[in-house]
Structure formats: C-alpha cells, structure tokens
Picture 1 (cartoon, rainbow, N blue to C red):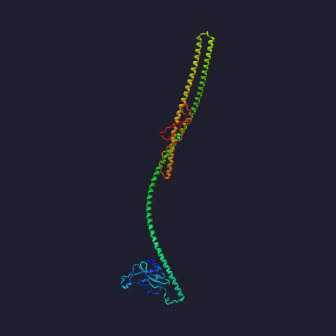
Picture 2: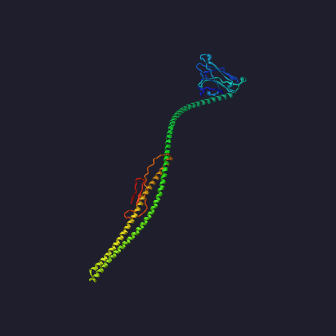
Length: 439
C-alpha cells in the first residue's frame, strides 16, 4: 500500500449505506499495463459537492469497508462547480504504487466522512498480450458458479445480520463506556479529595512527630536527672544502711548490757527476797523469843518474887533495846537494797529509752529513704516504658503504707509499761508522720 504523510479519512460504513451514483468514473479500461501510470477520469453529478478531504482509492474487488484501500490520491477541488468542464476531473496514479498482481480492482470515490460516493467497473493489471484470451466454461461450471454466488449472497446476508448485531453491541458498549467515563470522573474527584485529605493528614502527623520528638527529648533529660537522683539516693541508702548496721550492732551490745543488768537485777531481787524471808524468820524468832521471855518472866516471877522489880525491868529493857537494834539494822539493810534496786532500774531504763528513740528515728529515716528510692525507681521504669511506647502519662503521687515494723525484744523494768515485744510501729512515707505505737 501507499505510504503517505497523512492517511485518508475512512469509516466502517457498510456497502448498503453508500451512494455509488453521485460520482461517475469514465473511460475505465478492462485492464491496465503494469509499470505504467494510470489516469482516472470521473464526473460529479448535479447534487454532489466535493470537499477538501475527498480522495480516490484503488480497492480490490470484494472489499467491505474503506479501510481496505490499496492506494489513494487526493482529489482536486474544482474552482466553479456550475461549469460543465469543472465537473469532469481526473487524477493520476504513479506506477510505483500500483498493484503487481492480476486480481480485479476498481476505483472508488470516498468523501472526507469515509463514505463511498462512486465506484468504477472492475479492471486488472496485466500485460497487453493477454487481451484476446477467451475464457470458455461449461454448463456445470456455470451452475457451480451460480451456486457459489448463492452461497456468497447467503454469507453476505449473514454478515449483514452480524454487522447489525455488532452495531447494537457497539451502541451498548458506547453507553457502557459513557457510564464508565462518568464513574471514572467520580472516582477521580474522590481520589483528589482523598489525596488532599492524605496531604493534610501527613502534615498533621509531621507536626505530631515533631512534638513527640520534643517530648521524647524532655523525657530523656528528665530520665537522666531521675537516674542521677536514684544513684544519689541509693548511695545515701547504702550509707544509712551501714549506719543502721552499726546502730543495730550497738543495740545488740546495749541489749547484752541490759541482759547483764537484768540478770544482776534478778540476782538482787532474789537476794532481796531472801533477806525478806530472813527478816520474816527473825521476826518470827523475835516473837518466839518474846513469847519465851514472857513465859520465862512468868516463871521467874513465880520463882523469884522476892527479887526487886528494878532488876526485872532492866532485863526487859535490854531485850527490847536489842530487838529495836535488830529491827533498825534489818530496815537499814532493806532500804539500802531498795535504793540499789531503784538505781539499777534507772540505769536500765535510761539506755533502753535512748536506744528505743534512736531506733525509732533511724527506722523512720530508713523507711522514708526506701520509699523515695522505690518511688523514683518505679518512676524511672515507667518513664522508660513510656519512651519506648511513645506514650506520655503523668507520674501518680505514691502514698504507700509500709508493712509493720517490730522493734527488737526487750523487757521493761516496770510492770505497767508495755514491753518492746508488745509495741508495733507503723511508719509511713509522709514527712510529717510520727511513730504511733499500738499496744
């Protein structure tokens, strides 16, 4: 086919819709010699008006649409259509673009809408010496050709029906295409809205990310400060634990002293009890002596009535004086022992009270430091977890009640005062808290 800069306008219009009588081709030969330029003569009929994009093509016989042209030439527009000479036109096809086979071809005039307006009789491209060849056919071949023509007509009708069906399908497809284009426009508008929202969301997340980075930096700095504070508190806690160990050791020594003083107190109490028993025995002895003396006095009076009363009074006075001296000695001994016991009781009370006060104070300080250390440790762990998860929660104020602390056992010298075994102290984390004893 001919290669041109611009292809001619064609269409899929079937032969039934073409008007072959509006352009008439004149002087069409039965055959044309190959390798020779061919001139095509044609005439416009009265109602037809040529246009700028009209063209004349060479088609192989049996063509169905104008897409099947072999080569073409643009038509020349006449200056005045009213002139009879202007209605007769011609175009020349170069030999180079002409077909090289011996098939049948024909000229067709096609307007710029792709509709055929005229067609010539068929012709061939063959040498001149083949002009006088006579084709002889038999009656059977004629009948076969007629049967073939009927089949071709039937096939042509089927093709027309299929073309109508295809045109209907084409219209349906056009409607569906229009619908799809409308849906596409809707989707494009939705896509633009989504892109705009996505951009806004990206800007929002970038702002949030910057804020999170700033908060993360603040939390990191606070975490470092908390670590330094925890290390300091741990150092203080270790120092106070050492001091507590020293105080516990001193407390043990003082407890041993108290045990020693308690043993001495028990020994003195036993000696005092024995002295009281001795005193009771002496009193019983004195009573017995008094009874024996009265009995003896009665016997003596009975036996020695003539003796003077002066001598009797002297003996009685001597006995009473000896008895008074004995009582005075016993009471002095008892009072001295009581004073010694009271002094020992004071000595026992004073160091024990001091040790108890020191223990209370140290326990309170140790508990407060442990509380602060535990709180800071939990805050540190919580802040690390929040940094990992990118969450920020406020650290709650911890108000912890610690378990009951029971002081070491010791006996009080007083019977009314409760022992250390019976005293339980609840130590809280408040700075203004006091040790409240529960008996």
